[in-house]
Length: 325
Image (cartoon, rainbow, N blue to C red; front, top):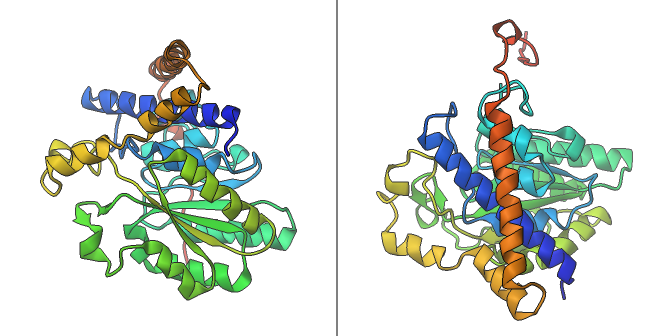
């Protein structure tokens, strides 16, 4: 049984993600942001449910579709929007953009434009935690296609061998860019791959935030207790295309009927219905929550638009390159 205050917090987090992403879609269409935007709309229950199971000092690694993870872990939407706008007040001083937002002070070790790129980072952080005895956990978010990468298999092997405190969260939205899961994997459940590396794999409805939270909580607890990793597969769906600009939101490789079917499983509407049915919230309170979240997104955009651009002289600051002699 999930406590009412937890459910209300999950609901508000999901609204923040949805409203933020809708605003990013709008500013992208208006040409107000540089670079690409890979939106999280439709997958809000995963980030909200998993991050609610974490302690403030725990860590996450993210993906190119990472705005939801950042918000769920406590990221400041003003600094996020400023980063997306390429402004100097952004999380990475406007140099990272949508796909590279990070805030180590909140345990957000960074989004990553490389498919599967965050997985070895998460396992490295988990190794540091175990060696240092910090008692923390790392959650590693990635997509279905990333579970085909060598980075996943090598990292999962080490995590299982050394029983590292990491929870692998695969957000199975059925598509690797434009390729359906059935065309890039011979399995239906990615969670079955965990058995190869000696740790549990769990499948959950990724559009049910209660189910996600109830599955993530024991997984995080087990990792923290030294029992090793868990692979949590969340079955979900992205409403929009692979990125903004994907023709007709991916209609070239998805049917309108499929998209509509998944939109009817809206994770926010599901938890809203549950809250109303249980008497935890009223229609008037829902209206107030939505208005409050909408104001926060308005403030984030205003902050970004009024922030300065980085100076040209700062182009080589805060960047690094690794080389081998």
